[in-house]
Length: 447
Image 1 (tube, rainbow, N blue to C red):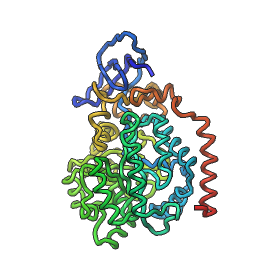
Image 2 (cartoon, rainbow, N blue to C red; image 1 turned 180 degrees about the vertical axis):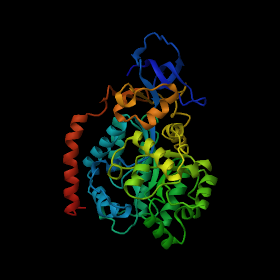
Image 3 (tube, rainbow, N blue to C red; image 1 turned 135 degrees about the horizontal axis):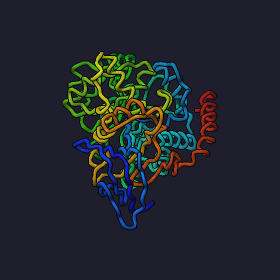
Image 4 (cartoon, one colour; image 1 turned 90 degrees about the horizontal axis):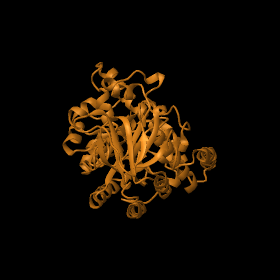
């Protein structure tokens, strides 16, 4: 990797406080953005001509399941709890270290090729070490944590763990991986959801997250059956229950948050709790439509995520942006309710804010990490465009096919649509074999 690199002649979507979009050169040095100007000539710097290209901040997805990527298409047309208990949990339990590494690598490859440079990942109960290894090798920026599950109906033996073992393994992984790879990888505590985690585990994890200064990441209020179960078990709605356990705070990222009443939304606003909106997953599992405009009016930080490959069935942020915007327009019969600029910010700078990384990523500004994506909009489906409609074109018309080059920490991880840190041909060959292995182990109840 060149120590100095100048990206020349691109249209730069800065996402800075003034939301400037202008033709600029960008100097990258040692993984950071060092200068932005109309014309830069830097001695000894590698020059990359991006004439007629668009430079945007890398997308930030705040809810992903890398471990599930192998299971794309294996659990379609089911509601959440059936999807989990009958298909996904048995398949997750069937992972080996090798298949989990392949699953994570496959997910990362798709994310990078569609312009995502940072994720918040809900890990796996077993073999989380291999997920971190895949992240490290790929160059992706990620916050991830071992999935924690202590009980649930129909849980496979391979996912069952004691509270003590779950915490012990989580702490071992935290000590090894948090702030590793020059800070590119961070750890989070990841209890799956209240249905599969005891009250005691959630309470202890809350204290540990605060002690170690890391994020807490879980699911909440995704599905009516889930909410009804929690009401029956604990006598409270999902968010009310988490509030009762003192989990709600600015360090918590909750995936989904569809079935909330007015009071629960107020609780999220009052505590600074963050929400990861996953519109395509919510539609495919028939979970419902989250009240995003109502949350935004309360100043709740709402970002975007694709969730997992088996419930989406892709990890493409372009599709999440478009769906997020269109859903609310139809739901509220208002074409202005969630505009393209707001949605693009949810996918970038707001995602950074959700992860506590807004000083490092999410915009193209001097001093920030060089997590950048080069788009080519000179295609039939995205032409014409100009500065006035550029964000609308990106949100409503563009797709992963427009992503040409991706930088993370100043490292070119995708060049001319070719992955540079992952051998895509080998990965594709390995993935089918790994899926067959997991299916065989699951069907034979090896785990």
